[in-house]
Length: 418
Image (cartoon, rainbow, N blue to C red; front, side, top):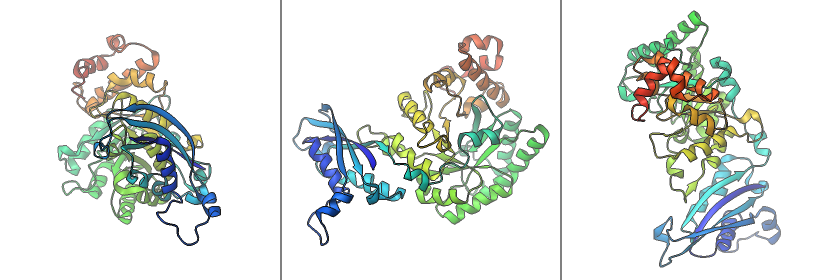
C-alpha cells in the first residue's frame, strides 16, 4: 500500500470528504461504467484507514468555497492506495494520489502532509548517484560542513570576468562554488564559454594544491537533449557538478539526466514555495522531496536559519530532517544544502537545531565574498564559526582569538549584510 495523509478543511464532515477523496482518486465515477464490478473495486480502491480530528477554524483557506459557513472542521486522513492500482511510476503517483485532490468540491482547504511508500519504489528508482558520501569524497572534506559560495548573475559578469572572480575564490580555500540558479546560458555569459574559462583555473588550482574545488554549472534546459549536451560540456572539461532547477525541468527531465549523468546533480527547488507557502494548501516539503530523491538528485538546496525569504526557522528544521532521513537506506540521502543569507553567525543555531549535524553544504554568498578582509577571510570566518559551534563555544568568545570571525561579527551581526 501507498499511504498518503491529507489535512482536510471543510464546512461539512471530514469523514465524508476523506471517503470522497478515496473514491474520486481511485475507483470513483460519476455514473456506472461497463466492466465495473464490486470485485474490481475491492482490488484497486483506495481506503480511508484513519482520521485524526483537529481543532476547527473560523478562517477558511479558500474563502470563495466557504459560502455562508462560519465554522470549518479540520482533520488528517490516512488513505491507502493499492500498489497494483498506482504502480511505482512517480508521475502516476503524483496524478492519482495528489494532483486531482485539489479539484474536489466541498473543501475549503486540503494539504498533503505525509507520504509513506513501500520498498518497491526503492527498487524502481536509482536514487542519488553521489549523495552525502560522494559529495564529501569529491570535495575532499570530512568531519565538517562543506563550505560553498555563489556566483551571482545580477552582476552581469562575462565569462572572463566570472573566471577572475572564481580565481579569487579558489585561493580563499572554499570547497564549493556554484552558478546561481538564474545563471544558465544567457547571451552575456554562454555556458560553453563559461566552462571554457573557469575549468582551466579549477584544474590548475588542483595541480598546485591537490584540492579540486567543486564547481556546479547551471545546465538546466527544457530540451533534455540540450541539457545532456550541457552536461557533456562539463564532463569533457573535467567538471564534476551541475545545478538543475528541478521544478523547471520536471521529473521527466531529471530522470532523463540522472540515467545518463556522470556528475553531481545539485538540485535547486525554486518554485517550490507556491506549492507550500499557504499552510493549509499544497503539500509539505517532506512529501515533495521524496519524488526528487527517488529520481536521483545528489545535493538538495533548502533554506537555513534566519533567511532573507519568507520561510520560518521551524520550516527549515523540518526540511533538513526530511532530506537527511533515509527513505529506504543510507544511500538515498542527498547532501542538504543550507543557504539564503547565511554567514557564520547562524552556525551555532544550525548545528543545534539539526541535531549536531555537520553533514551539509553551508552555502554563503555575501557572507563570504563581502567579508571586510576579502573572500579568503570570509571562508576562514565561516569555518571558525563552525569550529566554535561544534565545540560549544560562544562566537563572541571564539572571535577573541580569531580575527576573521571577529570582523564578520561586526559586519553581519545585524543580519543585513549577508
